[in-house]
Image (cartoon, rainbow, N blue to C red; front, side, top):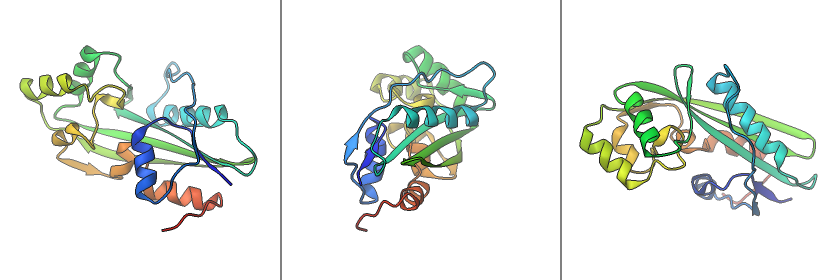
Length: 189
């Protein structure tokens, strides 16, 4: 039995490593992550995760793990910013407000599929012009849903969370470990 991580995210690999799990293979799924017209954040996140899972080819005994993280401000999906201007727009919308972060995970072994969605609430403090410009100059916003990384410099902007810190990072540790064990994967603790 092999574990295939269907993600190129270094954060997901790090979270698995913190659990003592090392994937046997990493295969990033190439899927269209564009939201459908009128699609709400949680269903969007779950749909993209399932698309990623379906895009990974594996043997019947292999365990495949995929995930997607979505930042939501009300009904609005804040994806990965395309440029610094869009990152600034996202961060200014989030500043001083609470928002939701959804991370959907899916595990497949043979024809069996297990899924779970972790929802967390996050508050971002108001940002000064200097804080915003320094953060944008760091380029940490690149490739990050909502334009920030809680585990990096963006953590300095977050005074409060409710939910899963690792879920906000991109892979909820407890839920992931549970689904992998349910699929039959065992690892040394």
